Length: 154
Image (cartoon, rainbow, N blue to C red; front, side, top):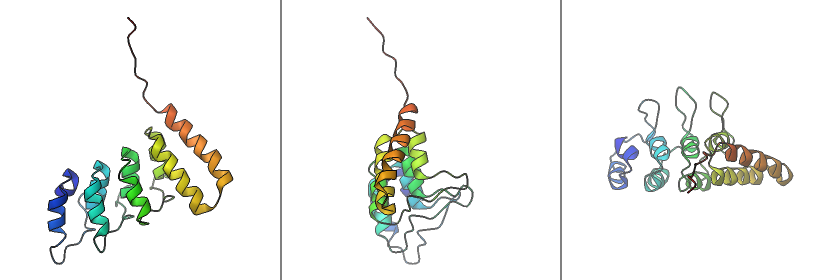
């Protein structure tokens, strides 16, 4: 678990060769994939997704969050597409508090991830007209949540 959290892809690769390893076991409710996704460790996430039995939608026992949600919340632009393209992440799944990956990306000011997720939702729902309205709303919320930096005038 620690190797996943710290981004040690080589160590994770070696551990995945251990017979009987349960890659979906949890520590404090988080799987190795969730830890790697929350920290944005692209190579570790890729390795865990390739491993037979890896589960991209494994949820924590307390909050209902997935690796996909954690990556979206953290703004990890290299990890979110891996989870989407591998097909293991459901874009529309919600946590126990009702938050989706799209909500988390928008709330935490990650407009590129918002754009990617709204496109995925539109493609999967086959609803391009709705996508435009949803996309604009979430991008606007993301914009409002973006920190403003002050510059001094000289």
